[in-house]
Length: 633
Image (cartoon, rainbow, N blue to C red; front, side, top):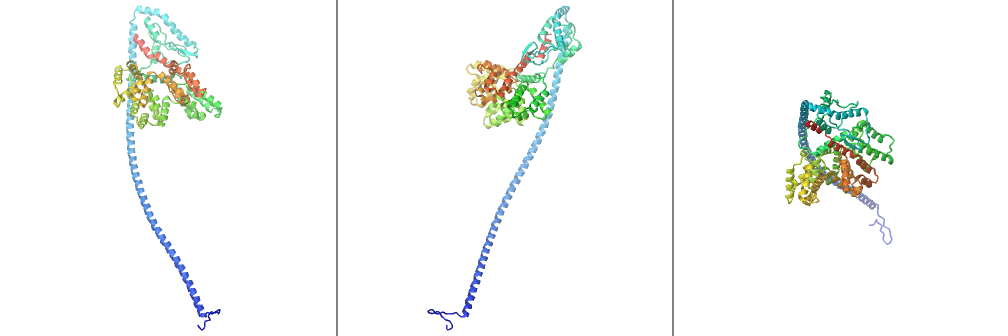
């Protein structure tokens, strides 16, 4: 345009003011558009964020609904479980109530049985008293019928009887000292131990013929003097008995309770053992000895870190516990608890703490039945049933009852059911029946062996070719459901008729050498045939690896110390199982001066007194001798 100066060929063209304003306007418009574009971009992002939030919220609602549904289902499941548990609790409460009712009924029955037993005992005592009165009346009548010739013979016999009574009375007044190395009881010289007297027949005074006096002197023991030096009865020779003499005889004559039918000699031996533990330690005071033990442990002079002090404590406990009977040791433990409110076993463990000697000491502090129960519990815990045969196959019926009660008291479980469950787990069906027959505590074992039954069982065993099912069960029951006397006779007859094989070999052939049920049967047979020799051989076999088997060897010593450890000691020597060493020397060589070995040696030193006491019981039955003397009149 005319008004515009153009840049041509180096010339400058200047824009007009109007154009500059337009340009400025356009630039501002562009900036506004940029700002608007930026605002739209931000709004778009915000909208995207809002949509994203909406989407997430929608997804969250879905998750919440799923979670709510899941929780609802779980709630229903828990509620159903609660209902089920409530039903179970209700059933258990009903069962508990039923058991309580049954228990109440059983208690009533037990009380009735106890009352009946007491009435039977009283009737038996009354019958015995009546029998004694009749025998005494019969004797008096015979005495009255004696002729003058008999009276003259009595006069001749008087010088023979007077010195006996005088010596008895004189011995009481002089207070003769007791020989600490031995004492004479009922004419039997007992070496080494001073055993208590178990009673005797009073010296019955009165007019008797010479023959009667001689027979009575053969059967009656010497009269024990009273503390004041006089005899326990009046020496009324040549006349009838005084009232005082009759009263003394009534007091000294024990009441005889008839034996129940089916009692075995094993149970009689167990009863004799209880009598032994009651009578052997009458001269000792459990309270005083409990005080000694407490002073040894808590007296202040014992240093638990001193080996010498611990050694001395072990030796003191060894000497005490091995020289006291089981019954006395239980009195000792009870006295310790009553005086000091503590467990003797725990106090000893707190000081000695560990070692095989501690195990033996603790074993001597509990009854043998409880010790057996502890061993069985250990074997059950280790799922090892075979060693249990050495316990339950070597016990009398009464000892099995004591074991059953001790196991229930110790573990709150039935030992028979637990052992059967262990056998069932290993799929040993025959062993289940073996255990059941051994622990049939309601069975009776006849004292006398029925030879007809022995021959029937023997014929069955020798004529049956294969033992399976019922025949296998019957064979096993021969050895697990009968007494040791029966098994011993059966084994003897088998050896006579079979000739070649003994009974254990026969069991191996018929049931297999690896049969667990067969192992139980063989253990029972070997125990019944020769008990001392069985244990002597077992100790010898275990001794081939003494360190590994020392616990099992000490178990035998603890279990048999008051039963037949002395007989085992003798069987060891006769069988020469230790070569030129007796059992005590063999133990000393194997233990090398350890305190555990010292304990076992002390048991061997003290076990003889139980054998001597049992021999005295066998040789001296006051009731039987008194009845025999009266029958001779």
